[in-house]
Amino acid sequence: MFAVPSAFASIDTIAVDVGISVFKTMPIGVVPFAEPKGRISWSEEKPHEIVTRDANLSGRFDVIASDKFNLALFSRNRAKHYITGKATVLSDGRVQLDCYLYVSQTKDLLLGETYKVQQRDMRRAVHNFFDKVVNRLWGDRGVASTKIAYVSKIEGVKQVVVADYDGFHRSQITRDTSISMMPVWMKGNKGLVYVNFKTHRPRLYFKTFGGVENPLFPFLDQTYSPAVNPKTGELLFSSTVDGKTDLYIGNMQTGKARKFAYLKSNQTSPAWSPFATEVLFTSDRGGGPQIFVMGKDGSDMRRVTFMGRYNERASWSPTGDRIAYTSMDNGHMNIYTCALDGSDITQLTSNAGNNEHPTWSPDGKLIAFSSNRTGSYQIYIMRADGSNVTRITKGGENTSPTWSWFYDEINP
Amino acid sequence: MKNITKIVLTAGFACLALVACSKKQPPATEPAAEEAPAAEATATAAQPGPNADSLAAEQARLEAERLEAERARLEALINQIMSEDVYFDFDRSELTEKARELLAQVGELLLKEQRFTITIEGHTDARGTEDYNFTLGAKRAMKVKEFLIAYGVSADRMESVSYGKENPKVEGSTEEAYSQNRRANFRVNIK
Image 1 (cartoon, helix red, strand yellow):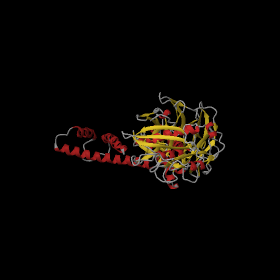
Image 2 (cartoon, rainbow over the protein chains, first blue to last red; image 1 turned 90 degrees about the vertical axis):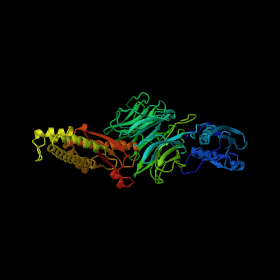
Image 3 (cartoon, helix red, strand yellow; image 1 turned 45 degrees about the horizontal axis):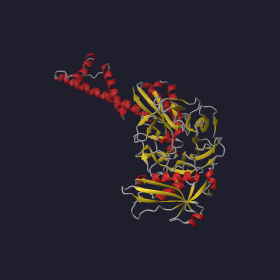
Image 4 (cartoon, each protein chain N blue to C red; image 1 turned 45 degrees about the vertical axis):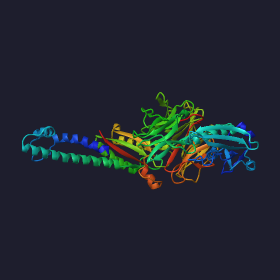
């Protein structure tokens, strides 16, 4: 199901028995960073705690925690590598973080990075190092530096916010008296496209980070369900005129848009394939919502979901082989994945309130979603097989997560 | 409640016009031909003489009463229309028998008061996705619009909008709350 990178072959792995997990995870040792006694008052988590969180969330590692280097422990748990480091305070008040990835047996240094940062940027530095670790040990790009946009009810009004993928460092993007919702990331993580109700109708807007809000396609009525083409940055979305909802495709630079497909049914919730050659969408042609796929030119339409009466809001895994979607059964929403021909249906959530709005991490290992399993809606991350569910928000109501693209060195 | 103030203003002008050719004259006033200039005069400059002054004051008072009555009547109508929510079954947009009866009353009011224009808002309950609920709310609003068009209300007096599940009338996740939220309702404006 998941492609195994070639670098993987030389690495000892075990399958973790968490529910139905089919994930191969790699044990890794984590040792607290050395620091001058009492010199640093950590406002949030310490560096090794951030590493541990990244490792646990990544879906790739099993953390073998130890107060100090312990070869017996690491060997017993088959942790071939371990991460540690050193924190020092610089004369200008910044913190210097030296981060290391070692081979357990030999104590050979595989990777070393030095960051000189303000304390508030420390998390970002550790995330950056962790992504380098993922790249070194897996040959993949990691997601520790990515972010998630979502909708948060602030003083009773839904606003669009952005946080690091682990839920830390939340910042508010919209400050409106009317509802903002359905955020998606512009190409290159330059900003967000979202829906706002200030005209008393749903309408798309975009806002670059640090920039101003701009209305999109004002000549179209009731625009929503935005989906950014991962190759061109074009926007696929729904527009409703009276009772009829159609898909449109628009260029955010030129402001031009045209109807994407001429169909009798109503269509919404478009999603692009990883290489933007095909499009998933929901149609009500059979009465209730079902998921369909068609070529980017509107050709070769076929139905994907057949089980159940309510299958909606599909999103394509970045590896291209599966889709995640929300299905309603007995009034409860749950998240499923299936292959593109509709076969191999896997239910990822069950018996835990409503679970909806799945969004893939850019490496395809994880799915973020919103759930009211604790009473209020909060954002959770799980592995793509439904295991290892971790809540990343608390308080208020948080819904509609959308994962950013890879960040790499880009800063918002 | 911006609408209401707008109503007062527009209704005010309408009533001034009505007064000018009204048949029900208060007994103390002069014939209609002289009344209209008098009414204007009160608005521009005071007539000389105490008698004319009291006449004008009486005139203004009666007008204010009539304006108030007209305003109250329109407000009552608008409130009636705005309180007429039309309910739907789960994931359905067909009008129920009860909905049709109710819409017939709204249609009647709209045919009587040609100056009213309406916005039909379609809503869904909290279940389901935001996206699909927008399309569902739109279908509901459209069914209402189609019914009113068939009833004789001109299409250009009505616009429809979907709020999906974003604007529930009742909070909560009980069937009771859901059934109250699966609705179409009206906003009224005066042309």
